[in-house]
Amino acid sequence: MKLMKFGSSGIRGIANQEITSELAVQIGRAVGAVCNRVVVGCDTRRAAEMIEYAVVSGLLSVGCRVTRVNMVTTPTLAYAARNHDCGIMVTASHNPPEYIGVKLFNPDGMAFDREQQTTIEELIKDRNPELASWKDMQEVRTDKNAVSDHISMILSKVSIKRKMKVVVDSGCGAASLTTPYLLREMGCDVITLNSQPDGFFPGRGVEPKEENLFALQALVSSTNADIGIAHDGDADRMVAVDERGEMVSNDKLLAFFGEYEAEKKMVVPVDASMLIDAVLPNVEIIRTRVGDVFVAEEIKKTGADFGGEASGTWIFPKVSYCPDGVYAASRLVELLSSTTEKFADKLSSMPEYVIKRGSVLHRGNMDKIEEELLALNFSGIDTIDGFRLTFDDVWVLVRPSGTEPLIRITVEGKTKQLVDELYNKIYKIIKG
Image (cartoon, rainbow, N blue to C red):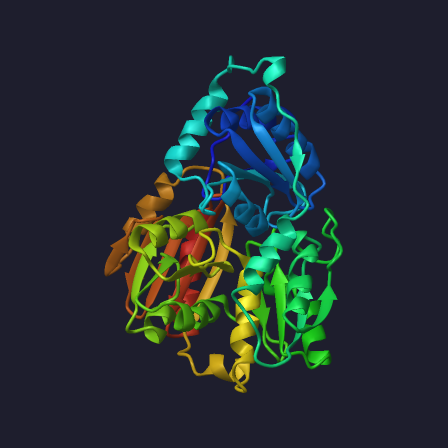
């Protein structure tokens, strides 16, 4: 069995090809070797239960005490981990339906860091783990209150000032059983879309990006809703549609949250827009590697008030170090309910920059690409995560994906012409 490495979002791959039940048993045994009490959950994917049961078997085989919370969102599982030594979430988040994966969480909601992941990888290599005697094997508990506990915690922190009409597109993922119910409990008029759990994700693509959300946009506009909310498969992500049915830029949403959440410090990845700096001139903006685990680690390390990524992940340390798309949805609705100003008008007052993001399929190494990038006539360089090159009035970030065989490109500048020219140049370098 080929050993897979944990990336910035756990371990992921195609079910029964890269991620198998045999590997899941090994992961369970490895985690059980360092954690005695473990809570396990999964999303709606077709392979999720196969991997979940295998993980549980591995945990039990080394004498671990296991609690199952069944189908839940990732932030729900991370919140449930507060009462255990760690949490294991079986999910592939925003990846296509054929993917499955495993992500590990500490009791404070923080994903396992690099050192912890390395420990698990080393234990997986051990072909002779110390197995428990039959008399030391534990019964599996089932906690049916994980979702209601998560909702209750959020309700204790948010409330709306006026009734809001909200369209929720759960993407047939685990949020189907969480976000619509939470918003109704808050007093919202909720219209649901793709809110039946289905591992084929028939309603739209799993990732909540604009090309997958035309139905949400149309429904928000046609029903005169105040806002539309969309999640990925496990609801660690949340994106928004304004009252006109237009997609809200995640860069602007990051700045919007920052205005209310960040008093002194805010953490963003190296690919975050310079819009953040412009909107929050009195907040220290700390940039780190791309990936929610790195943002969360830096928030904890620096004591920052808030952090997030333009992928649609938002981290509120007062709640959890896990990106919580469910809480983010409720907090956004709360903020919009406290003003009569339209969301679109609020966002239109922010500075405008042209930003373009894309990716290129690439399975080779970065050596030749690196050589050509370094030959460009740039004025500044940052290698904290990939290569961020600064030119006059425009910058580009080129970095390998942590979850897929892709090289991601982000270009931002003051004009569309500058952005398109640089993006096309970088694209050609990667394609060779």
